[in-house]
Length: 292
Ligand code: FE2
Image (cartoon, rainbow, N blue to C red; front, side, top):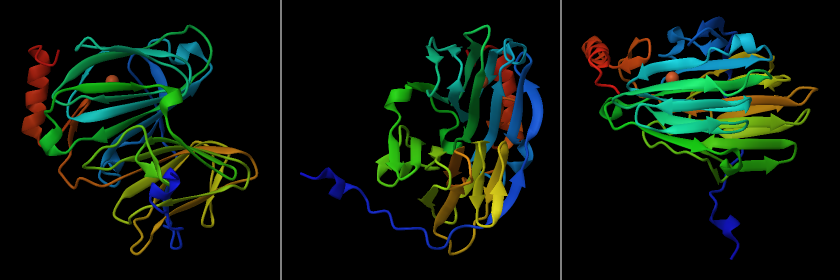
């Protein structure tokens, strides 16, 4: 039996979204002095609902990462860490432990609360990757914590002429990603494009979407998007997806999209809830040792 016939047919994108704006991100540090670029900052949380944060880290200097992220709490959302280079060990208060290596992903649901550490398991060499925060719906914020280590070799890939898409979450061109989430239906692709290669992603206009370029440059419409820039795609009414093309060099970028929750967002550091009262409760629970 030809199983390909069971794959959903992907229609071409004929009315691509417009580019809304380019974002440079903010150089900052977090944890115990880890230098990083906060690409999706707090002022973009409403615009890019259900995504709360995207950090890009990338350095050859151990002094920029060696402190790591010692024990800290989370409540109310999910963290998705994708390593490109380097090794990072995570441990949490539920007794889970795992090692992130190049090409692997850790997907962690903080739910009602977890305390964890994320520490480099190397003293020299490059460390590069991303951490994305995906919000949980109000009904799911206090669920049990959960996590999954996703090995690089288990991440499905879609291949076409000049294109490899690593499908971390969601679906593309009939390929199911490593992770699916019901409410927000997140799409998380790592795109590797040969010079001039074109990639299309069908997407409903109500989904919020952005692209971060980490090698080479991309062309979207008449806009050139250079390395280390994020582009926010407009929710153009009547649009049917995203079209992007690599420039004259090989390009790599992550493409992220999701269905907005449309719920109030209350954040205090590592706690993201819907109301200030829930934030006070999270802080109180943490202080009382109820997150461990
Ligand atoms: Fe964390």
